[in-house]
Amino acid sequence: MTVRTRFAPSPTGYLHIGGVRTALFCWLFARRHGGQFILRIDDTDQQRNVEEALQPILDGLRWLGIDWDEGPEVGGPHAPYFQSQRLPIYQEAVRRLLESGHAYWDFATPEEIQAEREAAQAEKRPFVYSRRFMAETEEDAARFRAQGRQGVVRLKMPREGKLVINDLIRGPVEFEWSQEQDHVIQRSDGTVLYHLASAVDDHEFGITHVIRAEEHLSNTPRQVFILQSLGYEPPQFAHLPVVAEPGSKVKLSKRKLDKYLKNRDFAELMQLGQKIAEKIGHVVSSELFNPVIVDFYKVVGFLPDAIVNYLALLGWSLDDKTEHFTREELVRVFSLDRVNKAPASFDPKKLLAFQQRHMREVPIPQKVEMVIPYLQRAGWIPAEVGGDLREKIARVVEAAGDRLRVAGEILNYPEFFVADEDLPYDEKDVAKRLQQPGAAEILQRLEGVLREAEPFTAEHLETLIHQWAEKEHLGLGQVVHPLRVAVTGRSVGFGLFETLAILGRDTVCRRLQLARQKFAASATRPSPESA
Image (tube, rainbow, N blue to C red):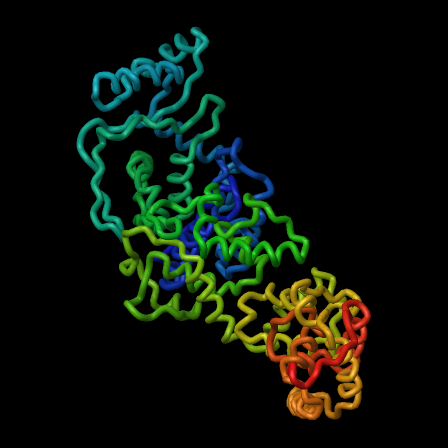
């Protein structure tokens, strides 16, 4: 048997991190067993579908490296892969279910159904539809239609016995047929609902393993009933634990952003993303841009392999100690019997830690290619990146080291890329370091020293400035602090002398001039005693 799994997103919203975890497990299982992974779009709910959500779903999966063997933009022998385009297939299944007596036309109004439900509640008994508006013959149907009633097709569910499925994660799971309702499978307009479409497609596509979120466990009896009533062998089922809110067992939701922002780690991740998005002109909205949505990580500059590594451990583990996996290793070791039953809490801090770990392993040339688009979108570098500029970017990336957690954080270092006249300055740092008595004179004299420095390397500049400060009877802090603010606009950053070498002689001297012109408060030279 060739293993065939499927991921079937509904384009009712953007790609949820929990949905990606499900897709990943389906993909890993298929790849582990040399099978196929199918992408199907469950778009039967036309009223809730969001037209612009489909492409981000496809793009997000591709960005993560979760490729599909059949589906949209790929094709395959079971096309079409959109449920909205498969209505004739579903209607034929409905016809067969009606013909076999496993479904029936029902002409009850929603109000009549609700009245029966409320009566059951009042009498403290389980609600079981009376079927009093069931049309058992064509004459019954004609009579109901003559009354102005519109019919729907319902499953005629068993009222006795039980269904037992062997869930590959949860083991044997029992369902009492008496607890199941006569679910609607076809609306009055002829369109069908999710349960029928999903079950029929799973058979039509040859799906052997349905791996999906725990919330779908309750759907299993009615889908198995449909399949068996049509004479089909049901697939094997595996229901994954939900991806839960930070520090909770409640399912992670795109609609609870305000709540999650009260979590410090979640808020920090959100702020990280917002800072980057704003600098590149990306639209920031809670609906389209937040850490629950995959596109957030793509925009910010996370590594797909880091996301995959982290998501694989949301509900699965190989052992109690191994956390770092390559994609190839995950394919080799993944198994459903290592999936947990308990909800897996989304941990923004841990996700960022995985990203940092993977980022350390990325070679500098690759990091350069990752950050270039951010610099371009910010308008700091041209579309064509020549050798000298590429080398400068590489030096900045190397100097940043672990500070560059995601590609977009290259935008934390405008001092290396903006024009001298456009350098942003921190007001507090300027007041503390540049607008103090004597600072302007120190910078002026230091400029003369730096103009003659040869070679203009970090090692030589460090020795030169130390010697000059000592010769001038100045404390080193009196020199390096105003120097840093003058050339970078702020008092923090990586190594000063490395920064000077990357910026180069001309930029450093030009910025020293501009800083004096803009911020000099006094030309009074401090006394040696104040050093």
